[in-house]
Image 1 (cartoon, rainbow, N blue to C red):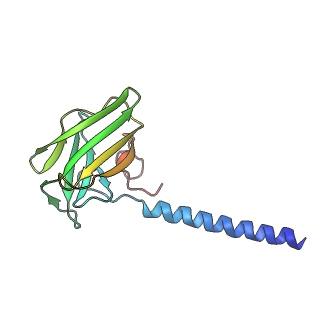
Image 2 (image 1 turned 120 degrees about the horizontal axis):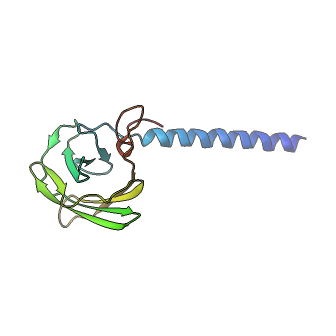
Image 3 (image 1 turned 45 degrees about the vertical axis):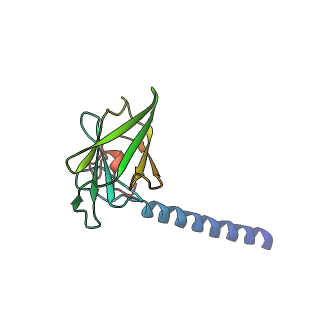
Length: 151
């Protein structure tokens, strides 16, 4: 009987620890709201915002820590959309203070996107992955790929 009680106590403690870790992980990954309603890409400096435009092109805007716009300097971006129709690579060009994709995202949604960010031409690339979901979140009213809620 004591063995069963010890096992149940240990199992309960593990479950509490697991749920606490999951809740902390979920909170740590909440996305910051961006000025133009896009997704803030982690691990970029300056902070890069990925915005899907109405015509399905992508705009990358850059911000400092106070979320004030900063112009593109030496940064380069490549995005790979892994859609049902196949992989599509988007190249970007500088337009004003932003980078804009030369092509549109493939039709559909629910596919993975990999954004390759380089601070300079010779810098090591940083790969950032997320699922492209263009449905509108009921809480924050942003597209799900850029949702800032904790759900």
